[in-house]
Image 1 (cartoon, rainbow, N blue to C red):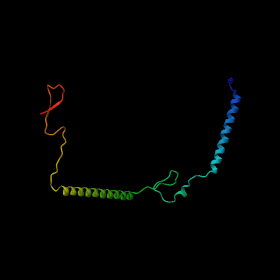
Image 2: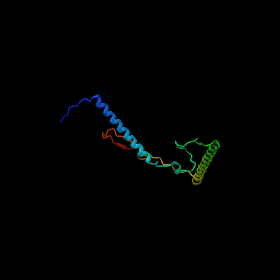
Image 3: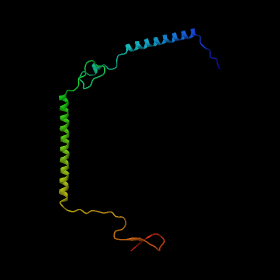
Image 4: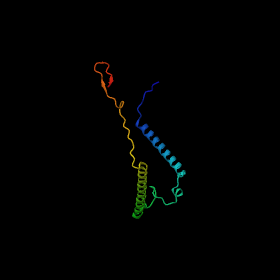
Length: 137
């Protein structure tokens, strides 16, 4: 069934807007009451009482950053570790070279060359054969 659409009068529009706004206010008040009853799921103070290396957005006060001495000490530790790694790598490389020299002892090792076909034979196309095959000389 089809019903004809009718135009609302200004008085009806005014009443509908009023009812709509009232309902929005009621719902807003209801949600505000519910939110006041709920506690925040994570209390920051109870969660961590230690001094952290980071700061949360909601913390008050000025954030504390590392000073220049602490940065220099961290850089020195990093450089020491890198130097230790490099020295260990060089020692391993020297040990590998020493074992290679000891195992070789100046002897020549044979080298294998991989070639195509049989060694020591020459092939050419047969002119009169017509088959296009190769003949041994």
